[in-house]
Every structure is written in structure tokens, then in C-alpha cells.
Image (tube, rainbow, N blue to C red; front, side, top):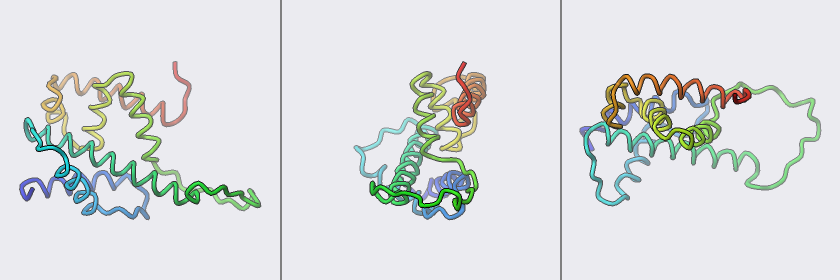
Length: 165
């Protein structure tokens, strides 16, 4: 663990950089939670460094999505129905990337093309380079670049709500 701790902290910081400013999960907590989940699994059979970070990236994605869902449930009263008395007093909020919406779009993308979904997960959530992603998936760097470009375009379209062709 000491050998990879610094890289996991950098990975966690990259994840949290895209979150809203008042996010309550810190990079250290994200790393520790990922470590606990890694340690709680069957003895790992990591093939290489890239494979380890791919698994860590997936765990961090799951942790962030779980955290966002928990926050949204609390914000909505944990299932208690609420009613705004005067809709005109609602102030516009700053638009942030919604991790839950991203997770949903990424799940849809993975159903259409599993490899593109894995590439996005490794590059976006894992912070892996083209070369590391290529190694983790066992495909060429050119394939990773091409699929990364296509997947990003698909996700942008899905996240902005544009009509699918």
C-alpha cells in the first residue's frame, strides 16, 4: 500500500476536482474507503500496475456515486414528500457535473459498447494515460484514442440531453 498510496491520493484528488466546492468527501477519505473495499474482497490477482489502478478507479467511481446518492436522498428528505410554497423564490444554482447522471450515462454507454465504457472509466475516474489504459485493456493505444474520442462525444450528447440520432 505505501508504494501506491501517493498515486491513489492523486487519483482521488482528480476525482474530487470535478465535484462541487462544498463536497464533504475528502481525497484521503476516498482513498481509505477504496482501500477498505479492496481489502474486503477476495485476495486480489492483479495482473499489473494498470490493472490495479483500473480496479481502484472503478471503486472510487462507485464510492462517489454512492456518496452523491446518499447526499441527494438527505437533500430530498430521505423520501419525505416536500412542496415548494413559492416557486418564484427559487434561485438558480450553479451547474455542476452530476456524478449520478454521469454514472447513468456511463452505464448506458457500457451497455452499447463495453470497451468504450471501460475506457471512460479508466481515463476519467482512474486518471490513467492512453498507454496505461491500453495496457489494462489489452488493446492498442490507437484504439484507446479513437474510442475515447467517440465515448466523450457520446457522453456529452447524453449529458446535455440532445436528441440521439
